[in-house]
Length: 448
Image 1 (cartoon, rainbow, N blue to C red):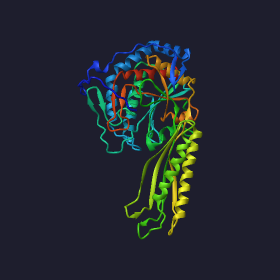
Image 2 (cartoon, rainbow, N blue to C red):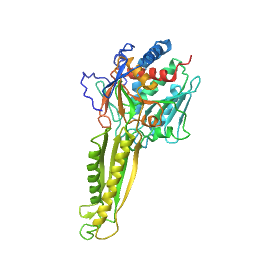
Image 3 (tube, rainbow, N blue to C red):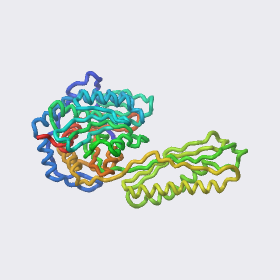
Image 4 (cartoon, rainbow, N blue to C red):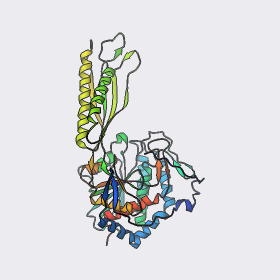
C-alpha cells in the first residue's frame, strides 16, 4: 500500500511525547447513512446492525472503555515501538511471541499459552462460552534476520521495518484487551486474543492454518487486524498458489560436455510456454494473475548448469480459475522437460521437481453476513465510509472453511509496507482501536 502523505512535522522525542500529541480529539460517535462500497457497488447496512452498535456504544461501561482507549494512547505507542524493535523474521517469531505472551498475561487474560507452531493465544472467558470469537494480528514480518528494526521518529512519523505491517495490529489487539479489563466488561462469548506466526510470504498462513486444523480450538468467528486505514474491510480472500520449479541434470563443461541436457534451456522453455498460455487465460473471467518472481541456478558462463529453478506466484479470487492457471503451469513444465530431453545428444535425461511452497485458499464472505454487517456498522459509527475489499490475509483460511471472518485496518496513516522505509503516523489511530472494540462487543455480545 503506497500513500502520499504531506503534513507539517513536529519535532517530538520518545519519552517526551506531549499529551496533546497522543490524545487526539475524539470523533463523535454517530451512525451515518447505511451504505458502504464494495467493488464499485453500494452495499446496504441493515438498520438492526446500526442500532445494535449504537446501543452498545451508549452503555456507560463501553463509553468508559472508549475513553480508556484514548487515555491508553501513550501506552499503546510504547507497546507498538517495543514490539517493533523485537525482530520477528519469517519462521523466527519466538522472541517477539514470548514478549507478547507476557504482555497479554499482564493485560488481564484468564489464560495464555503458546501452541505447537508458535501462535500466542490468550483466552478471556465469557459468561456462557457457547461462542468463541477471535481477535488476531500476526507476529511475523517479511524482513530477514539481521535487519535493523530500530524505530526512528522524525516529527510525528515513526519509521521502521514492520512498524505498520503488522506490529501496529498487535498493539491494537492488546489495547482492546486492556480496555475491556479496566472497565470490567464481560462478554457472553469467550474471546481468544491471538498473535499468529507465518502470515507473510513462505510462512504460508501456517499459524492460522494450525488454528483451524482438525481438532483445533473451537472458533465461531474471526477478526484479523492487519494493515490499512479505518475504512478498509477485507471480506474476500485472495487465493494464491506458489511453486518452486527445479530442473536438474548432470551439468558439465560448456565445450567438453556439449550435448548434455541443459536445465536453463528447459526453464526458459517452461517460462515461455507458461506465460504465453497464461496471458490468454487471464484476459477473461475473474481476475487472475501470474508472476515468475525469482530464477536461479548455474555456476559459471562456461558451465552447463546442473540445476535451474524458478519461483512462481499465481493468484485469484476464484478457486476454479486458480486451478485453471495451476494446470497451465504444470503442463508448460512437462512440455519443456520433454522437449529439452529430446534435444540431448549425450548423458542422462533431465528431471524436474514441482514443489508447492505456498497455498492460500480463496473464498468470499457475503456482505449480508452478520460479521460483515457489524464491521460496516461499527466503521460508520466513526463517520468513516466502509470499503469492502479483496485481500490475502489470515482471514483467507476461515473464510474458505465457511467460518465468518474479516480483516480490519490498523488505522492511522502509513506506507512503504514490506520495505526498509516503512512508516506510520498516529493520525487518530485510536479510532481504529475503538471501532475494533465495538465490533468485538457486537460479535461476542455483552453479558446481561
